Length: 434
Ligand code: IMP
View (cartoon, rainbow, N blue to C red):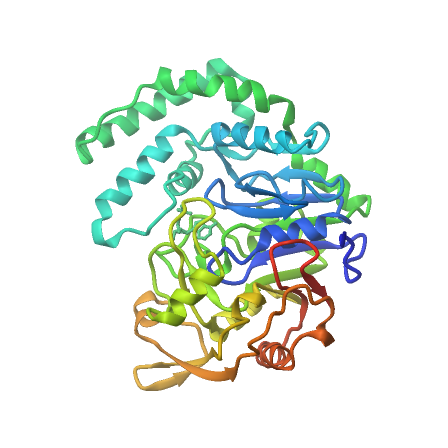
């Protein structure tokens, strides 16, 4: 089994980010790199993420637990920047344990991470319903409202779960306010604070042993020269500051968010690895210049099994957008890239890539930050010849079909960073390391 990529070296402190709109195949790459990593750390998002890992004929979709559980013995940390739904987390803990993984001394949960309570999920869904045609298309997992509570300084942190009396008071206070909004603003049924606490109690008991000061844990790791992989969820173009606002998630999946969401200091970071598919997808609403509404789009969805790992929603599909990818490279300071799902393009006669946009009649290679402008851009494509043969099970770059190499070389030339890893299938061994 392939599990030690030669380009990886001990002591690296690497941020791994999605370079598109999420679903780039980050789970597989984290799993691969974790064999030689001391710590794998999730730094933002919550159970909106769905990181799929396939190994030995097994498949698991992780939402909160870092993707480093199944390859090697890395310590897996849910960092302070994550918003944690304790009920979703205990389900996931059981799933991992069912695969014969012992979480003792493997899982660490930050006491400073914020908690998603059922009222956040209710608010997420009620607000989406009320947005009507302006809906963001959220996952409904309570992510936005939980980050709102955090920033409004009324959030409940994981450490607060350990003191039931104070927890009860905080929940009562928050539910009182939320009920006013539910009743008077949204005309929705109100919530019962006691019921919320009662539902939470068994989950608290189960996650208690894993709660600790992960910031200190990671500071010690940095000082001891241990290797750390900071695992981003979602993607750069869904970043609350740098993405297609307001059609974004409520956290910072970009490299900048990794330090804030983990406590690892910026100057300790040695590598920034971006993950991009060989084409593009997006789930939820918002501008997407290279989206296809034709048979090629259908074929990408079918070949790539492009359905949400968390919600099952069909993903919107389109050609690779190099303007957007280059923006992500610059935004995250990416010095490494992984290209995933190359095999999905195996049976296309022609493959297109967007090299620039036309905005109000002018050519531009700049990714507009204003969604209305982004809605108006017309993608301009370069057509490349497809290779029309399988790329699965190919072990070295040199053995790839000539036209596939040309495709990759073209992308690298445009972006200015090379693809160290090329994934040609969902399994660990279906990865070319350069
Ligand atoms: P939220 O994160 O649930 O608030 O959803 C906000 C937007 O981010 C929606 O368009 C979601 O479809 C999208 N989103 C959230 N998590 C993921 C993910 O893990 N992959 C892809 N899109 C996501």
